[in-house]
Image (cartoon, rainbow, N blue to C red):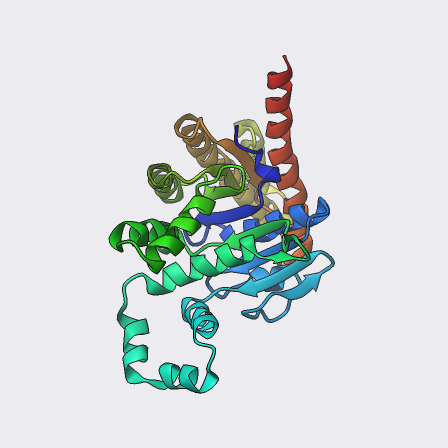
Length: 323
C-alpha cells in the first residue's frame, strides 16, 4: 500500500504556468519543515521559490534558508558538468572538455539531455546519505510548467528505452525506479478552477498515469467562495441614489460583490468537474487571498491550510482501514 502523501520523501509539484505552482511548492516545503523533517526545496526553472522561503539568491548547491530548510536550483548543464567532474578527475582534461566547441554543440543539440541530467541531480539528492542516513527527509521540487514538466518526468523512461545495455540505461532505470516508487514519490497537480487550467490538468493527469508515476494530491488554488444573494446586490445598486459622497463607494462595493459572486459560481462549476474526473486523487482547496502584496506571511497561511487538507484525507483513510 502506498505511503500517505505527507509521509513520502520526494514531491514534484506540477501545473500550468500562472496557477500558483511555485507558491504551492513553497507551502508544501513549509509543511515538511513544521513536521520536523530536514527539507530541501528545489527550483527547476529559476523563479520565486527561494524568495518565498526566505532563502535569498538560490544556488546550484543546497544552501540554508531557514532552520530545517535548504534551497537549491537544478539546471541541466550544471548537472552534466558536475557528473563529468566525477568521472573525469583530471581538472586540466575536464577544462579542455568544457571549452571544446564539440562539447558546447553537444550540450545545445542533444535532445532531452538537460532534462535527463536535471532529474538525475534530483535523484542524487534523494539518494544521498550523510553519516549513514538520508541527507534529506523531504525534497519538494518546483517542476517546470506543464509541457516542460512532463518532458522532465518522461525523459528517464525515454532514455531507458532508447539506449541499449550500458551506463545510460542503468542510470535511467535507477531514476525511474525512484520516480515510480509509491512509498517515496508523489506528483502533485496544481490548478485553478477555470476552463484552461482544468483541461491541462486532466491531460497531465492522464499522461502521468500512463508513465506509471504515483500521484499525490490535486491542489485547487485561488478559489473564490464568496457569494451574495441577488437581493443584496439589488439593494447595493439601489443605494447608488444616496448622497453623492457615498455613491462612488457603494458603486465599487456593488461591482466587487457582483464580480466575486460570478467568480465563485465559475469556480464551483469547474471544481465539480475536477472532483468527478479526479476521483482517484486527494483534492485540496486553497482560497484566493485578497492581499496587496503576496509574500512569506501568505505562504505560511496557505501552508497551514494545505497541511490540514492533506492530513484530513489521510486521517479519514486511516479511519476507514480501522473499521
